[in-house]
Amino acid sequence: MELENLQKIQERKKSPGGRTARESCGKRSSRRKAWAWKQTCLKLLAGILCLALAGIYAVRTTRERIPDSLLELKEKYPQTAEFVDSYPRKKNREISMDVSGEVTPGEIPLFIQWDERWGYHSYGNNFFGVNGCGPTCLSMVVCGLTGDTFWNPYEVGKFAEQAGYYVPGEGTAWALLTEGAGALGLNSEQGEVSEGYIRECLEAGLPLICSMYPGDFTYTGHFIVLTGLDPEGDVTVHDPNSPENSQKHWPMEALLPQICAVWRFWALQ
Image (tube, rainbow, N blue to C red):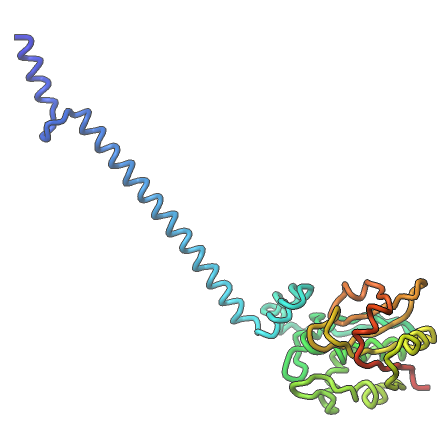
């Protein structure tokens, strides 16, 4: 009798499929865990997809908001990264262009063409920060030799455009450094690209503006200012596109092969 009762109890505990309740419960638990794991994986995949799409959108949006010429500037010259990245929020800001606090008469100041004060303005068919090296160099020399701080880089660039010294598709005409310089209170003349001429001018305190071949300073064409000689005879340079280059002292043998043309300047009496 007891054996029969025990068998009946075991039969009642069995599920309709013939499994015991414990076995059935274990199977359901396994299915729930598998379902939960599947849901977790799907959520992770959805999150990864969202992040990827957000990244693609961010890159696309950035390229839509920042002009290609500025993105190219950043790619070629990493020192311009902050200037380029700040374009969307700073392009329309009104910023004082006063340079009087940076100028000491008789000393050539360093101005950077992609300074946010003028770099987002246009020069010719591009941004001043991209192709404003010529006006920036002349501005340094005018301010340093005459003390007239009206002629900041932006004003020199505007003068160059209005007077026809900007050539579409080419950039700043060399005539800006001769005829144009005369209108801004300077004497100037094109000189000889030689070590002797350059040393003679710098020893006499005459700054030089140089048009440069591709090399350490540029991938295409560029203007820089030679400001003097250090005690070892190396040349001090103001590069309007690079504070880093402007901190270096350049051996003449490294500098000279990169110079295409040179002009010397002194103030009108």
